[in-house]
Length: 81
Image (cartoon, rainbow, N blue to C red; front, side):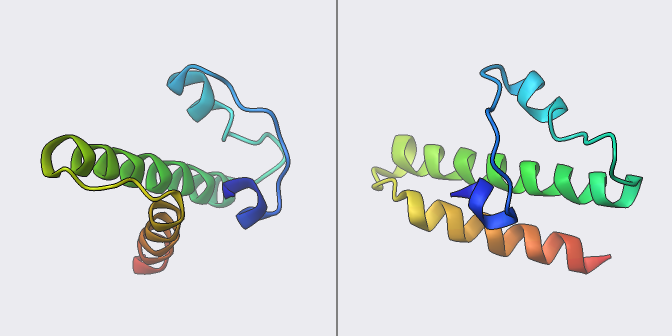
């Protein structure tokens, strides 16, 4: 879902550190790479919050809900600056 959101098709790394580092794209300028990093952080942050809701609040994990929340957070973070 996330790849289609930004129009990218790729294979992702298993380890979180390697996955994050793969968001550094050599042919993009530093501003675009910063936005890519914000997208990654938005996704991870919303997955983490959903995980906590499942564990501590007995809520159900809905992928689409987490995805939309990540999009909204990322959009707000990028446009705040």
